[in-house]
Length: 306
Image 1: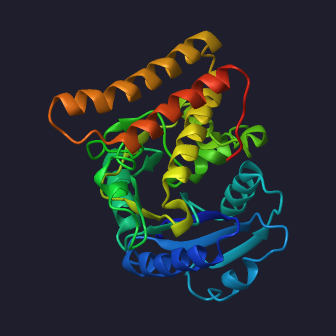
Image 2: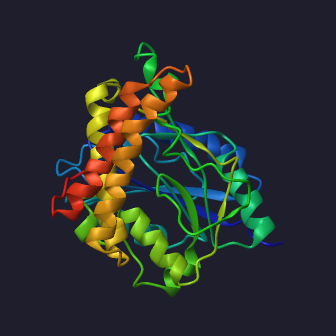
């Protein structure tokens, strides 16, 4: 009888004990739902210098068939933490799944991934991360497409050239065969380290498919459910887009002009909507404008930490 594959879920956490507990509770249900198809374990890397997540992890000591391991990084650098998580998972994994500490997968999360991986023979799959805000948040946050345009949404099993660490799974043997492909510490405070990692892996032969039914919920806290946060986030996103594209050789002028085009579209969008008789969605327009400015600032040499 063929042994069940071992899936180790790699998690990095920083100042989010309550969301981490929510995630681990969800993973207990995920593991139970997929028990006939896989054995599940967890690695949690604590990026807090005070090791505050250790007590949370201890509460799940016997919750998973393949155990749960706690590792301390404490560098406040997500790339260093991710590398520690991946390398720890590789000690006994067939597959390494990745999800962020503020996310919450559905019970059939891993089953949906296994469906795609078994059907396609791919080395990796990625799914959508669907953001949601707390009850009582401003209605315009969900009426306007703040979360739609940053979410992966493709046909099930569609080929991809990238994936996201907030929701993905990768064959452990690929990572063992390519020890040089890891998360780059120089991007560990800026962001974009996951896009660089997966694009580099794809260029090295990693086959990636989209798993439409393997979505997770990203639970935004109340202090992020504000217009100010969304504008600053979009500025950082644009800045990170510059960093990622520059890493792969795109020129400064080209990326500066791309940022200008993004900003121009953001200005024109509310006007065009008004002319069609639609609500202008000014807030989304301003946030989108900030994305372009972030790109242009990146080309000018400015770097915004995540």
